[in-house]
Image 1 (cartoon, rainbow, N blue to C red):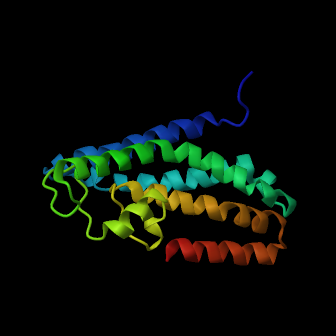
Image 2: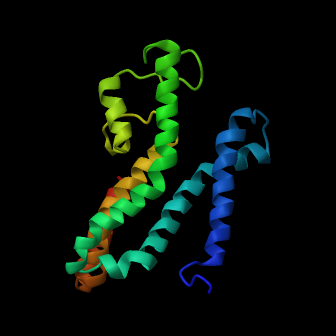
Length: 188
């Protein structure tokens, strides 16, 4: 039986977006050439925005009806557990590997010489913030460069149930005001 929640065209679009982001991170530092390839690669970071829009659409389609009502807010904990189980394993492995390498190889977080090492100015703040996925919430810099996006995604997951309830069950004027407020927060 086919999965009715899966939209094939979006899967292809996600593939293009993921390859764009990978090319940006892997090839742009080596692309010291000028011209069209360098200009194109220099804009591939925008595919992260596409991922966020696609994620919002898929979450609204999959969970909006279930989390959109006041009684359904009880399902928020389960929603957050499922989302964390989806994003944290790889993120946590990369974070702990980078921190472990730095600690074992340099015995401190202050003078790393290798690119994989984690130079931290305030390890007592930066490590817990990154472990809790709150670094991009104005708390600390990301230990893993692109890890800011996972932290931002985690913030969106926390906001999603309340936004779904507001957008699906409030009066149109309230929904419009909520959408404008959400847009203002995102653009700030």
